Amino acid sequence: MGKIICVANQKGGVGKTTTVINLSASLAASQKKSIFIDFDPQGNATSGVGIDKEKLEKSIYNTIIGELSIRETILEIEPQNLGGFLWAAPSNSSLTGAEVELIYIDRREWKLKDVIEPVIDEFDYIFIDCPPSLSILTVNALTAADSVIIPVQCEYYAMEGLGQLKRTISLINQRLNPGLVIEGYLLTMFDRRNNICHTVANEVQNYFKDQVFQTKIPRNVRLAESPSHGKPAFLYDPKSIGATSYFSLAQEIIAKDGGQKIEESYFG
Image 1 (cartoon, rainbow, N blue to C red):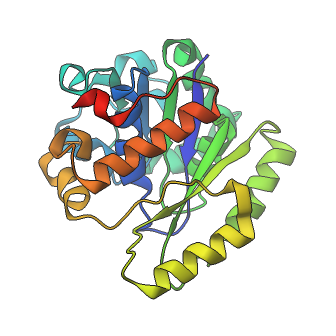
Image 2 (cartoon, helix red, strand yellow; image 1 turned 180 degrees about the vertical axis):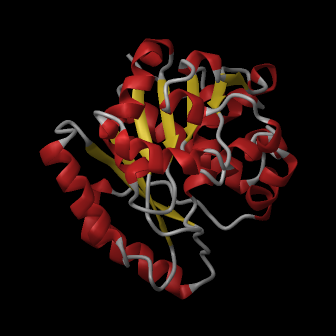
């Protein structure tokens, strides 16, 4: 059975979409069948792997409102270049309508979970990219997930909003998804030359302790450029520090799940 991981933080610009794209690609390159569900109406994860979101005729929106099964929306992403298997359930601005339409649907908090259920055995990892809010879409993602990765940008206001997110996760545990756990806090946009980054990293690690991933994601030009080329960093520049950092994060998750890690040198 696949492991469902949502990537959530109501703050924008902390690296949620970058993490979904590059972590799922790194797991695919590690021979794990991976898929990401773009559950953000902005559709940045969709365009970040080269899919033209404006020309989409089938998207995750169609599955949420019951028009299509998720299998009818899934697209394959360059498996021959990754050396593994990566798929995407794309999104675009039409998903905004789902936030209104879900209000009138029975079991609205479980809708995404119901959509994923038929394909859960077909993948090793299923990622959900959440919008930068604690909306009904994010509640759906947290209800469907086994665990949540929380990206934390290494900046002065890094801890702002984390308390509210933790309270939301606690409520989801109590009322909708008792099995939901925190996969880990991921330090992003880390610049070793910047003192505030070290201060924030130490603060997060002291507060959340072993819930913080060992891997830190650095500020990296190649990582920032890759979405404009419609590729994960692993395909755009596999030797860049951004790509290798996400590969290390993938190995950390594989090891945590009891799997066999793959050395980076395996891919040349």
